[in-house]
Amino acid sequence: MRLHVIIAAVCWCGLVDSRKIRGISSSYKRFYRERKSFLCIDGSKVIPFEQVNDDYCDCEDGSDEPGTSACPRGRFYCTNLGFRPHYIPSSRVNDGICDCCDASDEYNSHAHCQNTCWNLGQRERAYVEGQMRTLDEGLQLKQQLIEEGVLLWREKQSQLRELQQAAEDLQIKLEDHRKRKHEADRRKEQTLKALEAGDGGLRRQNSTVTGIFKLLDSNKDGSLTVDEVQAKVALVHDEERVLSEDEAVALLGGGHQMDLTKFQHTLWDILTKGDSVKIKDTPGAPGSPAGEDPHLKAVDRAAEWEATNLKKVEEAYETVNMEISDLQKKLALDYGTDWEFLFLNSQCYKLKVYEYTYTLCPFNQVTQKSTAGTEVSLGKWGMWAGTPKNQYSQMVYENGEPCWQGGSRSTTVTLTCGTETALRSVKEPSKCQYIMDFQTPVACQPVLKQRGIHSEL
Image 1: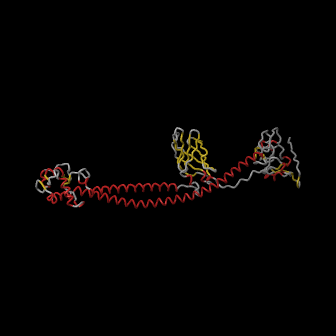
Image 2: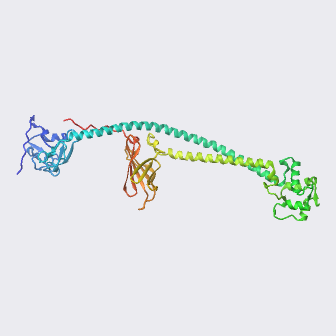
Image 3: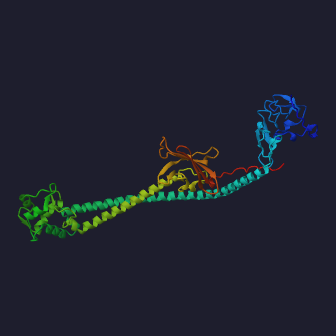
């Protein structure tokens, strides 16, 4: 037998005040004005109005029993003044468990529920206010970092232009030093060849002729003999073979000895040409004309000096080009629409979790180091991987060291708003796949302030 609940209310224009109907929100009150009949909200049925909240389910959508547990698909609205209103399944009405903080769901049970909405609201309001303060402070810090990012970006661009200009200047200088070294080497080579042949043009001719004559005149008696020529002169293409007596006599002009005057017009000319015979002593050896010749020493020092200078310029040119390449790679990265993330480059942030120390170096890599000192790569910079609305909310670091189960380690970094820049947490939800919470002011986004938690009646 149906038990009808008669709702007594003060009427305005013949209508019952719908605030007396339990379990409905203000947006649904228009459906519960007392009339002769009630139309189920889904339009499936019309029932007498007195059957609303009579603890018997008439409507398939449960709309006729908003304040009882009669309908399996019904919902009960917790008004929760002072806190957040919400719906609960109607099966929880009068089940002896307090679900609504205002205790409205247990109006007819043995449970003794207290109205805790005001205390809950106070705590939540304090939390929200704290979050808003953090957001406001974070946005102010973000603006400062944006301004610093713009200045830093301009500074990097200026630095790149200076490096490129330096590279151009060094390129010109490099070509000049290469030519100078080549010329110094050429002079040295000419000097060596001339000295090997006894070229008198390097010094005053008489002095050079005399020096070579004295070198060949081993016994210093003022004349050259067959034995002295055999001891000091060799064939250009067969230096190891000792000249025969006939070959030595031929070099001495057909005789067995020769003085300085005859030497200057015979053997000296042959040595000067350098195409058939030469002095056995090698250039630069002790006692040789090259080793003793001051002109050779001068051109040799000049060649070494130019080689040293060229090497210095080459090293400087290589260093500048490496700096240009590194800077171009850094500037090619996406640092946000206002370069707000640029300050993170070249920075690293650490967090110790149990026996591991995790290091995040934004736009570079993520590592894990054990207390034993073993360091493992958890990924290198890959890309931004945020949502379409906020592309810069997540970073992905990939291609870390291989995992023992196959594949490589990787890390996803979620950026959250905060007043400090710090690594807050690290987790490994699945093998070799890491997630990090990285807090920084540049992750703060301007949002509409939430509507305050209502405390009004």
